[in-house]
Structure formats: C-alpha cells, structure tokens
Amino acid sequence: MKISLVILTLNEIDGLRALYDRIPIDEVDEVFVVDGGSTDGTREFLQERKVRIVEQKSRGRGEAFRLAYEASSGDALIFYSPDGNEDPADIPRFRPLLEEGHDVVIASRMMRESHNEEDEQVLRFRKWVNNALTLAVNLWWNRRGPYVTDTINGYRAITRSAFTRIWPESAGYTIEYESSIRALKLGLRIAEFPTYEDERIGGESYASSLPTGLAMLRVLAREVLIGRRFGRGD
Image 1 (spheres, rainbow, N blue to C red):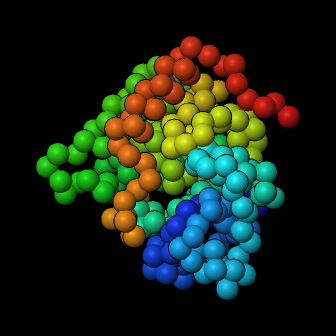
Image 2 (cartoon, rainbow, N blue to C red):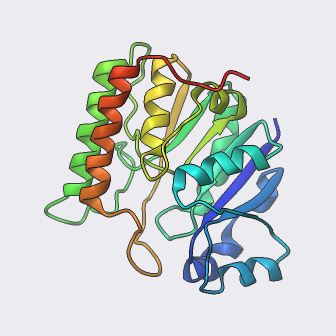
C-alpha cells in the first residue's frame, strides 16, 4: 500500500521549527504540504527543504482535504497538522491498521489510554462537547461497532477509495465529523489508536469553540436529513 502524508499548514512556522525534524518521513511513500496562504515564513521553510507545496486558493480545512485527495498518488492519505497538538511519532501507527483493511484510522484523544489537551483542567468543555457529539453519531449510525471514541479529531488517515465514497463537502473544521458520520453510514471499517494531544505551539487555534460546535450540530442535522445521498461515485 502506498501512503501519502499530507501536512496541513496555515502560518505554522513555530510548529514546523519545533517538529519538522521529528516527522518520520521515511515511514511513508509520499509527502507534500497543502498550504492555505501562509505569510509567516512557513512556505520559505518548506521550500528550503524541497517539500512540494500545493497552494490552497480557497480558505477552509475541508477544501485542504479535497485538494490533498486530488494532489496525492497514494492508496491512503494521512492528514497531519504541525501545530503541537498532534504527535508526529504516531505517523507510523497508521500503516498497519490501513494494511489490515481499515478504511479510516483515527488517532483518538478520547480512549482510556489517550491524553486530551484539556485533561488537566477542571472544566473540560471542549472535550465534553466532543464526547456528546460523538455519542450522538454512534447511537444514530454505528451498527457494526466498535464504538468510535473520537469522531472529530483531524489526525487521521483515510483510504482513497473511502474518500471517494464519502466525498466530504464541508468547507471548514467540520470536515472530520462529516467524514466520520458518512463512514459509519456506509458501514466502512474504522480503527482507532490512543494518542497524546499536547499543547498547541504558536498561538491559538483557528477553530473557535462555540462557532465550531454550532457548525458541528448543523452537520449532524444535515446528515440525518440527507441519509445516504452523498459521494462522488467515480
């Protein structure tokens, strides 16, 4: 199986400086970056290292996923953001699960052995909301099991064939939630492994909690309504 590593960037120079040399590039077959218009030196950093950059003209994480699908030559894609939240040492853990025949593999922040960024806090609002949204998805669509613990995390892999069948349409940070829902609707094989979510490097996330949570609810409602009327089918 040929695996493409997709590095997603938008002004991530601090994270790249801290993490790039820790990315196990030798563990994958193809590496490229989808950049959303960085102006902080991210592009120059990558160009110096001769990393292929796919320019993203339209903003949005969902658009970055679709561009990656079009630009890749792999049988499966791993999506990685060098922002400090995602441990690059986990990248080799995706391959065996993909080669076992899983369609989607998620690095879960919610499994018993995992660590969520909010775990040291008394009030874990983002984690609680994520768990509630995940519970709703499992109750509504998960008929084959096992329980999917982290339907929202973006640190994941998906096979090319599954991406085509799912064909996620979201523009922004709901892309992963939508993908998880559609994978469950289709009865695709989903695997997870525990990951350690560390603190973000270089400022605040671009995904504000309240607007993103409301957007997730809209996706949930839309997916209930459309059923299985989705996918590109080519």
